[in-house]
Amino acid sequence: MPESLPDGLLMTWYGDDFTGSAAVMEALSFAGLPAILFFDTPTLGQLARFPGLRGLGIASTARSHSPDWMAQHMPAPLAFLAGLDAPFLHYKICSTLDSAPHVGNIGAAIELALQARPSQGVPVLTAAPRMRRYQAFGHLFAGTPQGVFRLDRHPVMAQHPVTPMTESDVLQHLAGQSPLPSALLDVEMLADQTTAQAALDQALQSARLLSIDTMTAETDAAAGRLIWENRDRLRLLVGSQGVEYALIEYWQRAGMIALPTPVASAGAVDQIVAVSGSVSPITAAQIAWSAENGFGLVRLDAAKLLEDAQTAEAEATQAALALIGAGQSPLILTAAGPDDPAVAAFRAALSQSHISPEAANQRIGESLGRVLDAVLQASKLRRAVISGGDTSGHGARQLGLFALSALAPTIPGAALFTAHGDGVHDGLQLALKGGQMGSADYFGWIRQGGGLR
Image (cartoon, rainbow, N blue to C red; front, side, top):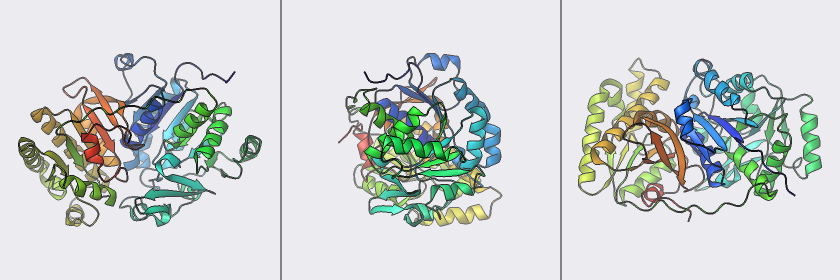
């Protein structure tokens, strides 16, 4: 007889951005393990709306904030999650390791999480082969439409405007953020169960952070087995949704959970509303596709937001409503890629202001959220997209929502969700997409209702 999973919550998580936080909920839900993502620590009434959960998470915008912000805002939700006493508390980070000592500091977050959930060892599993994120002998690789690149040579991440990746070795990158001793569990060590267990036992004699390689479904299963069978010693996990993918792969192979029934599309609609604060080349390609396929582009002037947000938002809202009246789906954007002149104009305006980059990025996300709120309310449309990891966090908070649940898949990490709130947007169908995520026709795919293809 296969081992049975315990009743109740299996995983709690705290995410450093909204898109990544939602990706964990998506991974669990589409594997047949009901999960919910809250925007803040939930009330008893909010919890009561979702019985029978196997996963519960809280989303944040920690990736775009300083260690001081983390110290102020993270202890309470981490303590709440730890108090739910699931086998694991997962600090969810980006699969491309977005972080630096001054912003999104993973080391600072680990120290705070360890105060809430002591753990002999802390697995760091960043890769997710299902998403074309791979780790081999400690080095992280990420896929693009042009191929797979080592992180420090990645055409987007090596040039990231806030956290450029100059180091692909995960533990070397984290060494600049945490003094905790570390060790690598590489693909050779994961080759069989006995070798993997011996490597873990040896590593825990001197190390606290345990970087884990994974390249395939087989190494995912090996990593998941190692973590699950040592859950009494590995109670705090750090990584992307690759953590959940690894555990799910093992649970399925071990017969603890059944293979899920594929989830269908939510159905096509004529029009949606999309907003984007991403300057990624991948998002730029999606914007270009959308402009040729029934979407109308609306500019929200990011430079103008720094001095007169109200006027800039009103102009964008009216332009979007005019497009809806003409039968198009508005896509409201601040820039169409890193080479858009709007990026240089924004940076010039920021340099002349007294606003920090962190505050400016928050202002952009909040403005896009307010425009989305106004357009949805005026048009009565019920499906929307927010593009950009940081934008999703700041923007979604403007909609009066408190939780998301999974509705229909697209690519891993960018599903369509049902939004839950106490106001007019309760039941809204909402997709959150990181800048690096999605096919060229992603916005059209959401208009069609998602669904595997």
